[in-house]
Amino acid sequence: MKNFILLTALSMSFVSLKAQNQNNNTTENGKPVGSISMGNVKKERDTAYTKNDTTFLRFGKLGIVIKPKSVELFSDSSHHHHQFKKAKNIENNWLGLDLGLCGAISENIASTTKPASLTYNPFNDLKQTKSINVKFYLLQQRINLINHHLNFRWGMGITWNNFRFNNNLTFATTNGSPHIMYAFSDSLKFTKNKLVNKYLTVPLMLEFSLGKRKNWKSFRLAAGAEFNLYLDAWQKQISAELGKQKEFKGNYNFSQTPINLVVRLGVGQLTFYGTYAITPMFNSSQQSNSLVGQISNSLVGPTVLDPQSIFHSWAIGIQLNGL
Image 1 (cartoon, rainbow, N blue to C red):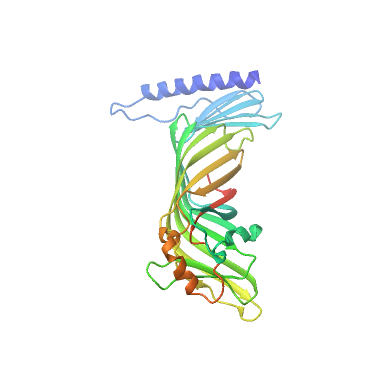
Image 2: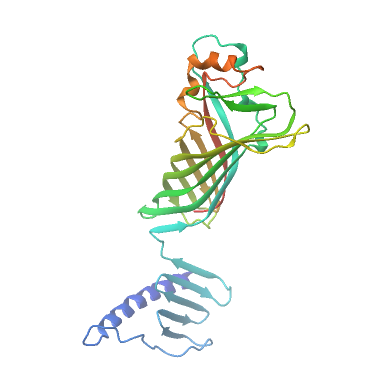
C-alpha cells in the first residue's frame, strides 16, 4: 500500500514536471516540440517513457500509466489495478429502463351521502402483481453542481401504467360535456382486463451522492418532480365469449399534464424509485357532484367508479439501466 502511495506521489510530480517541460520546449511560434523520450521499455527493469499522450513508469513490480484523463496503477504480483478517472461534469445515458408496480389511492371529497352504486373504488381490486409501471428513457443526464456530491438530474422518456383488474369492469366516458369516465360491471367474464395510459415524462431532480456507482459502499439519494404530458390510453379485454378483443382506445378523461413527486435511492449499482401523483389521475370534471346523476341514469348496470373521489396514482420499482 505504501508503494502505491509513493508511486502515486511520484507520478503526480512527474506529470507536473512533464507539463513544465512541454511548456518550455516550444518553437518560436509557441507550438509544442512533441513527446519527450525517457528510455526504452524493458519489463525486467525500471523504466519510464512517453508515447503520444501517455506516460509509462515502472519501478520493479509496480507500474503506472498516466493518460490525459486517467491514472492507472498496477502490480505484477497481484495483477491488481487501481484506476483514477477524472469525474465528468456532465454524464449522459441515452437509453434507460425502469420497471415496477403501479396503483392508485382514492381521496374522498364528498360531504353528502352517495348512492351505494357509487361507493366502490375499482383500483382497490387490482391484480397487483400484474399492474406494471414501465419507464423507457431516451435520455438521462447528470450535471455536477458541487464537487460531484450534489448533482442536477433530468431526463426524457415515456411512461406506461398498466392497471390490471381482477373484476369484470368496462370503462367508458359519458357523451355529455364535459366528458367523465365511469366503470360498470360487465356481463362478460374477462380472463384479461387492463386499462393503460401513456405519458411523455420529464423528471427534474436534485441528487446527493457519495462514492462511485460501481462501489457497493456508494450511496445516492435523488428527489424532485416528474412532469408528464398525456399521449394515449386504451383498455384491453379477453373473454371466452368474444375471444381476444381489440384494444379500445380513448382518453378516458385522464389528466393531460399530471405532476408526480419522485424519489430515487441508490446503493452500489442498484437504484430503486418511487413516485406519487400530486395531480389527480382524472380531470377535475371527474369530481363534479352535479354529474353523478348523469352517470347513474346512463347505465343499465351499476356504476362502480366513484366520481366524487380523487384518485392519485403511485409506482415503485427498480432501475434496470441508466444513470
